[in-house]
Image (spheres, rainbow, N blue to C red):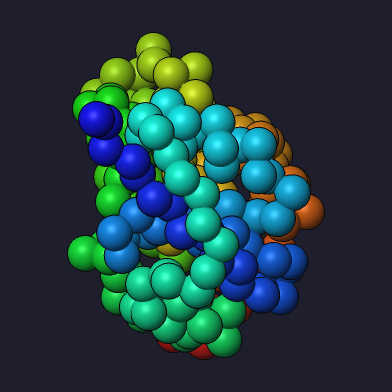
Length: 175
């Protein structure tokens, strides 16, 4: 008998639309915008076998508190102990690097590849960035094109622009 992985999906109302919060055994495994259900299911089906999807409000409280504070322009410590990041070692290295980009700042895919010590890996870095399962908290929206343009964001470029502008406000408030 194989184990069943129960994934709870709760909806969080944000100023830029509904956000799906998926958790397994009380740990957040996915955060994505409404309309990206296919992306949520595709990514999680690669990570877990025998999934049972459940819709309820069982989501880590610290994640909701962090999102509340974030959208209120108060940057708090990230609830990383409440999050499970599942991916390859390379993906995890990219996601860790994303966490080092300060709020209100951005970096190009090329700069991120250089930071990881592999300047030729721009495409691989972009792909790992696209597969980030916990957007906003792991700030993949802070990565932009080398020419400064906003490129590729699963939540849509208008949301990416909103998040960057919002974080510039958090930065200004903190200064």
